[in-house]
Amino acid sequence: MNKIICDTIVGALQGTNMQKLIIEGPTFLYGEIEIEGAKNAALPILTASILAEGQVIIKNVPDIADVRHTIEILEYLGCKTRFEDNIAYIDPTSIKNFTIPPQYAKMMRSSILFLGAILSKFKKVRLTNHPGGCEIGQRPIDLHISSFAQLGIDVFEYDNTIECRCDSVKGGEVFLPIPSVGATENIILASVFCDGEVIIRNAAKEPEIADLCHFLNKLGARIKGAGTHTIKIEGVKRLRNEVEHYIVIPDRIVAGTYLCAVATCGGEVLLKNVFPRHLDSILHILKSAGCKIKEQRDMVYIKKDRRLKGNQKITTHYYPGFPTDLQAPVCTVFSIAEGVTIIKETIFESRFKHVPELNKMGAQIHVEKDIAIINGVEKLRGCQVFAQDLRGGAALFIAGLCAEGKTEIVTAEHIDRGYERIEEKYSTLGAKIRRGQ
Image 1: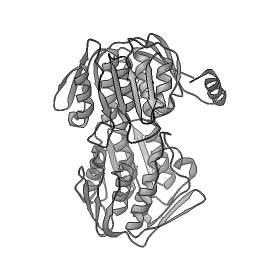
Image 2: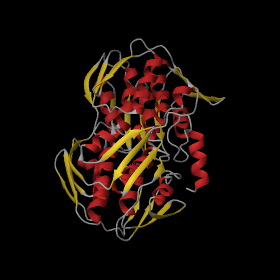
Image 3: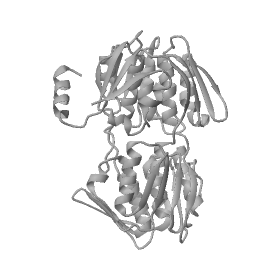
Image 4: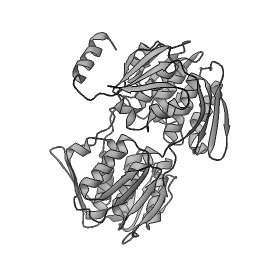
């Protein structure tokens, strides 16, 4: 990023409550860390809680910005909520609104899931702004809308508003041209009280979808096939009054980020509260590069004591393939590995925004359309960089940990959307980090 563009960004952000993370490197990481609950499971589960007829208690909920925004939406709808010590208490019995106003819709992409949940509750829903989130490329909602239409739901779009209405959700088959996570979740939420049975073909297989289905089944829904490409939802008349102490699965992307941090910085760390099978793709990549990794039932140990070898070809793909959410952190890993590594991004077309910032730190990465060509260098140097999205911000955070000197990450609030108290947790492993404005 050239000086003119940097000056423009700084000027535009003057006077805002801009968060910064200031890191002193280089750092070696040592110790143990417990992985928090999964953001991408907690958000749809919190959304689904409005379908209960009594209070639900959800444990292992990460204390991150996106969770707090979701709770704000629940409160706006009329739910009574309490969130403390990573436990969310949701009482939806007083819910009364079926409209998501623009100030909430634009906060995050997952606001789109309220379409399916509120529609199940009221047979009508209005979203008054297209969903927000990180700007990582086109994420159209046409799959959500076309899927709803196949279920007999009337969908109207006007003045940047989406409105859905139906007398009932009809049973039938919905085929997804791509295994979209959000569309799969929205169809599930919309179909809990369907007439008959809804079958989703080419459904997404992510573990977070299975966790959502497990939660709904504990409430009394009848969902089979989660974790496969065919999910069947048999409609029920109502759900149970309450669910107590549902535990959200560990966050595989947060765990993968720790793995990438150790693989970049060096050291040895034991990750606790993980599902190793959810990490197969990233573990394979890091083992091939030279990391020493041991797996146990709910733990992963990683050690890096020498420069890693690149010369890999990595392609992002839908689960169980290599996740697009770890593409940016892996870029940082191989920016200082020996040799040339090629990463192909197949999910989102604008997910290399971290590359110019890494190059400012001394990396040698060239992007051609959806491919990043990484020529490994021996070290990075600290400087001021700009986090432009959640996972790109994580990549810069890792780069700051291993770089020589001070790294200042501007707009660190992007990172706060998906990582719980990141400066505190990495500090327990030996990192030197402070937060500023």
